Length: 253
Image (cartoon, rainbow, N blue to C red; front, side, top):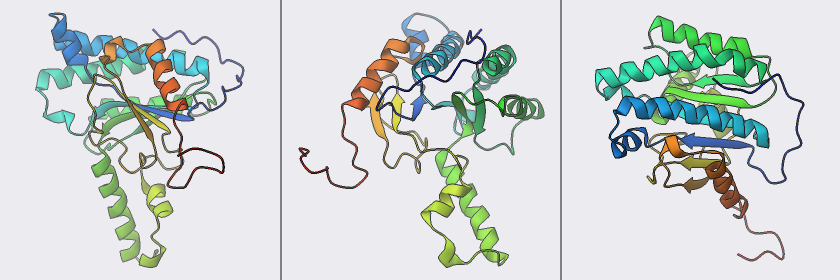
């Protein structure tokens, strides 16, 4: 179980820390296979890594942490694996929600909800409602999430407003589209980390990642710990972010 303690006093943030870190948690199955264990054990160890990283992100002063928990494409996996993943989600929320609440962590869920079973949908609502007043780390769980689906849903909502006469086509801007995405009101990620050595986004935060820095690490997700997190942040801190502009006077390109 997570041990975040009671709501901590606000800590000063280290200069230059990314405000929002997003993680593609990859490699649970390969971690298990390399040890001769069932894939389910890899997923269980992966949940423990989430607990550890949430704790560490809280300790060092990260404001937003988004984790890719279950993609809209993951439903195509074998039924027993999907069932195991759903069970782990339920266990995570039921076991850890009180700890997250006491630790001043606010939980937010992004992703489609129309095709979720009633018990899962209710758990997601409970997690959000129970922590809505918390002011510490914002933990965003991407569940049943796919960025193309998210953009399509936002586009349909905008098209419906235009058709109803509530919006003019010339009013459609990038800011308006962003306001219709699941991440409306959230800062874009500064740093996206992917574990297991793979180097792709896999339909994760495609719109929001426009100016994110990427760090790909070889560790399988169950082996990813606070030290690995810090190394990724150190790599981020060594980069120059320009957002499409030029370096400031005196800086070297």
